Image (cartoon, rainbow, N blue to C red; front, top):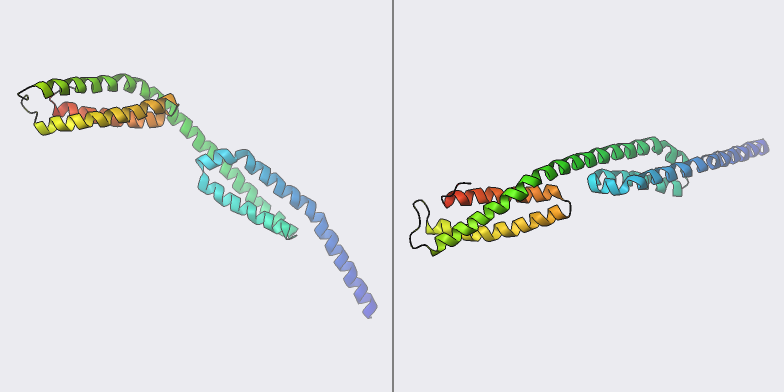
Length: 198
């Protein structure tokens, strides 16, 4: 009786090994395919959805570990979730990239008027500060403090405007508009404090 049972066990073991070997190739192919899909979107994903990319990387790493341990069944079982995660990551990153492109285009349009208006405002303030600095009597509503604040504000506005211009030159219109608008707002306040019309 023992001999047939040993033979049955040996046969089952052989079938198990063959079964595992049959799953090896699909498991390896599935991991390679997932890795390739992730590589294709990695740069975009790292820029637009880094946290989500990290989670997908962890899933892929788990599948690779299972593959290394010979758990081909586990690898194949994990693949649908991993493939869905990669697909979702691609959708998220693509959507954010498109939003970024739309925001950049909008900012580029806004930069035109700003790049014309702000230098004129800064020049007008600079001219007004020069005149008031030489004057013995400040006009009504203008104090020594507001003149001093305008002088220091002028320096910071010029520095920020330089940053805005550099950002625009490098094509980063979102940053350029953000900094340019900050300068415009500051210029409007200073002009008001100096009794100028903005």
